Length: 385
Ligand SMILES: C[S@@+](CC[C@H](N)C(=O)[O-])C[C@H]1O[C@@H](n2cnc3c(N)ncnc32)[C@H](O)[C@@H]1O
Image (cartoon, rainbow, N blue to C red; front, side, top):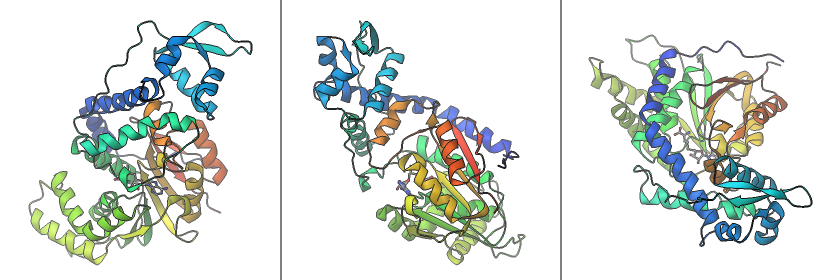
């Protein structure tokens, strides 16, 4: 098995990412607390699972929970209870039952603060995310939600998502050494910002341009894939506007003397070499085997069936093709958000790193390489036959 060891990452991008993360650290903390307390209120409150009064009556074993609430997802129940012990909300009672199973009880000063709502969550996002968090009880009973258009919430805010997503996209793009006459797939492209971001990146590197005052490096076909029809409609209709909007939003080319001319040339070029947006699920990518040279997934894998998606990405990549991804991994992220994601049918949530590596190797990728500035970026290479 080969190893893709020689990862070259521009320090500048990593530095930039660190700076962004630092600048949004407070926001990110409020967001983590939102998920934590929204999940906990769903589990403990009277209008939720009502664990508080259940545990006030007496210490409880896993079996007590199962019998009282018809829980079937016992692994998740164990995971939740042990997290709550770690987070000092529950303690293990000194006696265990006949099977040696521990009893859980509330800590003496058990109290849940109100759920803090990040100021960058609008009412719609707050409602949708709360519902996901409150679904953890149903998830324990084995019930899932369908992924719906309602979850189109990730354009939450400029402070957090837009800034962080754009930097993490660029970080991922930095890891790809693009060559001319190749094909690039943006998996889970949403309404097209990430695909346009890749297109702009490539343009800066000299691809897909026809202006005479820049070395032309040939073409890289840019494709976006997403299962959400409304996103695809927006992406197809608005990719030119996205390009202009992002240039303004992220203040690109501010020191370029002929900025307006450059932007006009870019607009012309993107119209000449537009990204292609395809409706489809990453678990069943509607492309032939060995189609793409590069694939990228930014903040996507945790919403999918990860083993199936990795298998599919491997299939559509050419031998030697590269896949780069950014997602949350255990044990680097708190689990509450991950549980909320898992209430959606088919969503894996954050994955354990060792399990992820195993899956990658099983489907035929070379051992994943990680870059760990904050969470984890993964670079996978398909073996040459
Ligand atoms: C948080 S957004 C990230 C969007 C984009 N990658 C970016 O950087 O702006 C997650 C995206 O994953 C998409 N998604 C969810 N499940 C998917 C699946 N099974 N296959 C492909 N995309 C999926 C959603 O529709 C959504 O557009």
